[in-house]
Image (cartoon, rainbow, N blue to C red):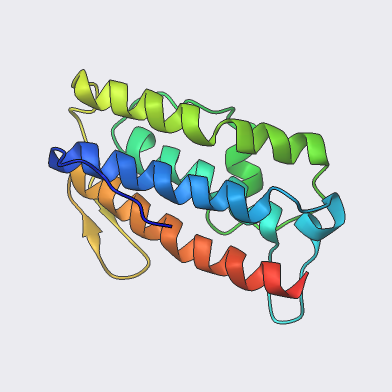
Amino acid sequence: MAIFIEKLEAMDYQFEISKLSRQVLLGLTKDLTEEQYNHIPNGFNNNVAWNLGHILVTQQLLIHKLSQAALCIDESLVKKFGKGSVPQTDYKLAEIETVKSQLFSTIETTKRLYQQGAFKAFTIYPTSLGYTINNVEESIAFSNFHEGLHLGVIMSLKKLV
């Protein structure tokens, strides 16, 4: 499958990459059962459902929270899927679908807010990988990198469910 992205401004390109990543995520997970979403294989500490929620939450934290802007998601998701969390119980299919339904609206809202200049303030953030995020543009790019890592995890998990 060839994917063509028109010549875009640098940040538009970053948002398009985010959408592409999430299209791939939805394609990979569309036929999973509730049991498959929740299965944690040996050697893993999370599941497909958690990774989907973690992708959604982390994008919001890296861009919105570090820019001192309101999150576009319910705060309760941060506790369930934020950094350092693990699945505490099985996620119901309705909850998983709620997370999936927000994957694209959060990108569109974030893009619109970015274009409006809503992310002026920024809290510098040293990542656990040793890279320091200095501004919202770096944060958007790092969020895409982070999503790619978790896309790989989901691909591995899917082979084992």
